[in-house]
Image (cartoon, rainbow, N blue to C red; front, side, top):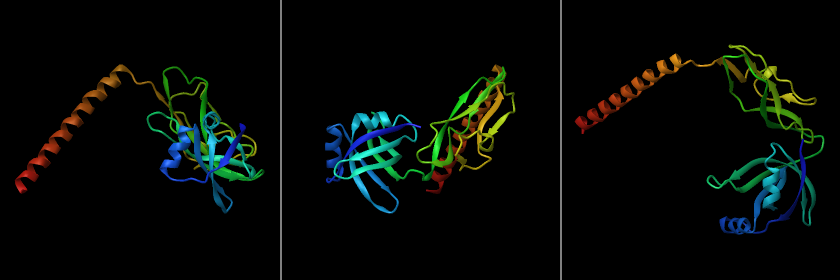
Length: 213
């Protein structure tokens, strides 16, 4: 798994104004918590943080000014909905050898049988593993799978030291037949009919409400 080191500073100013000033200085407000300790409010370098967060479940060594080093995992990354830059990060304090539960991305490899369509029903799977040995992804092969094939969480091959934390019956991959043009044409009128019925029902409700009033 990825392990990066980020220099951090203790943060003494709080509130929206202070957060905006940090972002203008290309820094990211963050909070480190866990193990029953008081939360530590930090500011992180913007570019280093952005690069680190490109990897799921990245293990971060925080070199905190006047505090020492701490190991952490990102638990929640808040981004600007329009521009995508990182607005705030919640970091979970971890220790070497400690086991944690995280959501790991699922990666598909291979090609299913001709005439089939592969649906990835769950893009991540919850596993439990040591904080310092978290897999970056779980590889799932769909090579040669026929229509009707399904892969559940219990069918996944996990990295050594990892155990499944999700429901065993969680559907990960579903293999169906590729829709034909006839199938698509048959679905279109049905959808249009449903829309007409909904519109008619809505008009009827509005008329009834008007009469009551």
